[in-house]
Figure 1 (tube, one colour):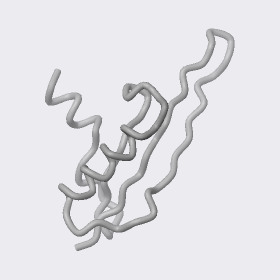
Figure 2 (cartoon, rainbow, N blue to C red):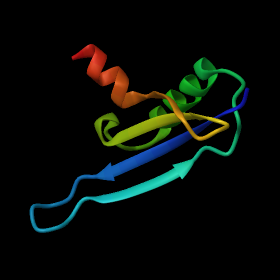
Figure 3 (spheres, one colour):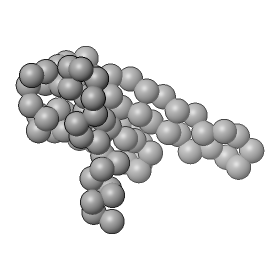
Figure 4 (cartoon, one colour):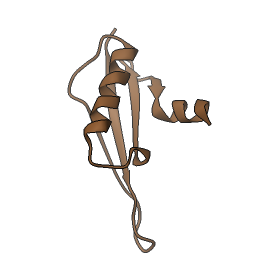
Length: 77
């Protein structure tokens, strides 16, 4: 099965502005959920942003979310 990774970046804004959100997909498909998660983590580590403002989601070929950094944060906390 093929998996895709979507990255969501929520830039913190000043108190007068709205939060700017950018979303994009990594260009490569991944064979396993684990490899998709690793690619997402590596991509996020390469960004010059606080990790707290970056969320990744892994989707299967039918568009269902199978993993997310939001899930990991909920499990940890």
